[in-house]
Image (cartoon, rainbow, N blue to C red; front, side):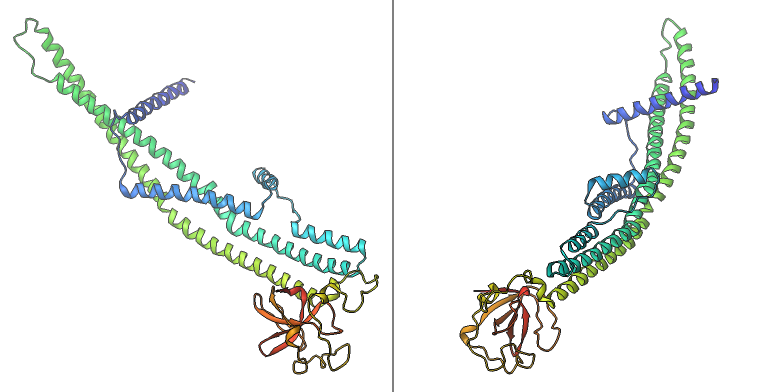
Length: 392
C-alpha cells in the first residue's frame, strides 16, 4: 500500500510538471524542442493517411450498404464479435416479388411470362450484387479497417509517449537553466567591506547547494534526452511504415476495382440478355390475348407509321418475301428513328442496331405491330419498335 501511494504521488508530480511545461509553451513562456523537418513530414503524412482512410472507409460502406439501419446492425454484430446474418439483396427481393406476382396473374399470360423472365434476371443481378459486396468487404474494407484499428492505434500510442518524453526533456532543460542562473548569482563576488561577515558564509553555502542542484539537473537532462531519443526512433520507424501501408492499400484498391468491373460487366450482360430475350418475344408487349384484336390498321403502333399501300407478294410475308432486295419502300412512307439500345439480329431477316444511330423505318402490311422494317445504308431488316424512338 505504501508503495502504491508513493507511485501515485510520483505520477502526480510528473503529470503536474508536464502540465506546467505544456502551459508555458502555449503561453510562449517556455522553450520547446522542435522535431526535424523529416520527422514533421512523417507525422503530417501519417495524419493525412489516417483521415483519408477513415473517409474512404465510411463512404465505401455507404456505397455497399446504403441503408443506415443495416450498417448500424452490422457494426453492432462486428463489435459483439458475432457473425453477421445473411441478408437478401434488394434485387433478389424484387425478383422474388415479380415471380410471385406472375404465379398469381398466370404464368401463361404475356404479362406473367415477362414478369418471370424479368424476375429471374433481377435475382441474378441481386446475386451478383451480393458477390460484389462480399468481395469488397474482404479485399478492400477489411484491410482499411485493420489499419485504423491496429497499426494506427499503435502509432498514436507511441506518439503520445513521444510527446510526454519531449515535455519531460524540456522541463529538465528549464530546470537546469534556472539552476545555473541561481548558481551564477550565488557565486557572484561578495562585498568584503560589509559590516556583517556572516552574509559571506551564507553566500558560499548557497553557491555549494546550487552547484549540487546543477549537477543533479544535468543528470536528469541526460536521462530525459536518452529516453526522448529512444522513443523518437521507435516512433520514426512506425511512421516510415506508412509507405508499406500505402503499398498494401494500393493492392487492395486494384482488387476493389477488379471486383467492381466484374460486377458491372455481369449486370450489363444480364440486362443485355434480358433485353434480347424480350425483343425476340414481341408478343410479351401486346395486351391480353383474350381480348379481340383491333381492326387491321387500327393498332396504335401501326398508326404512327404510314403503311405502304401495295406490295407484290403474300399478305403475311415470309423471311424470303421481305428480303432485302425485294422491299422497295416509297419515299412518302418512311420516317427517321433513333436507336435506343444495341440489338443483335437473331437471323438474316432482322437488322443489327447500335445505340444512338439514326435509321429509316417503315411498316409493311401484315407485319406484327411490334416490328418495323428498318434501313441503314445498304442494309435492311426487321427491327423491334421497343428499341426505337420515332422522330418527327
